[in-house]
Length: 250
Image (cartoon, rainbow, N blue to C red; front, side, top):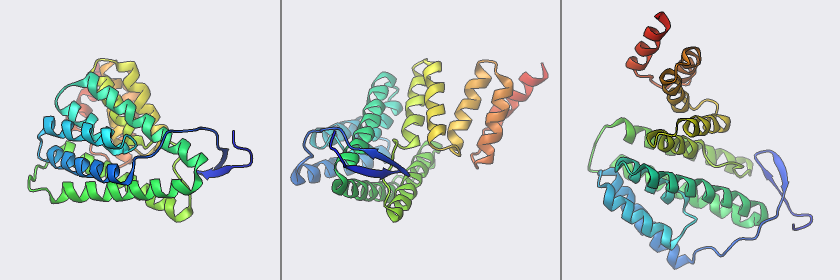
């Protein structure tokens, strides 16, 4: 532990402890960003194998580009390679956790990390919104919404000089979805609850829990989760609400 070194993280003073490896060089970072932006283009145009390859190359150049791990997970989910998606999302979470640890021990660098992520988020959103492939799928829309939510969070923290204490909620949401698709329902439920612990107003997490509760016969909990999802502004599918109503009437 480094005596006397502390940092305000989401309103909590914590002592710095860990030692980490080196950051990517500037040239490696530039190459990583080129691969990352190519991955976003491929992801936006639904060329998922090419997207996965580009994101893997990104991570080889700069493993701390957390959004590349997330993009890799998204690519694998689209390819129905759920076990691989689980690995990618876990790596994404671990990368965010390492960045928090680095922020604790390297106060000056924390600001750069946050600014880098803000820039990467803006680039990601701009690429998706300006893509020549104008699909209007719910997955594409929700992807942009998640990035925009994270961007607002980081910009707010920048104004108050606070760095994030936890990985963003959308990482836990994605991890839960990969567990769900892999048939690990208890793990999915745990991760969606972690997402809500990070962001209690995360409508999509409430929605996913409602579906899981309905599947497992917990109708009262499903009803409460639907109300929470709609209260957060998330459009719950009418079929899910009908299923829950029919189960209640039995």
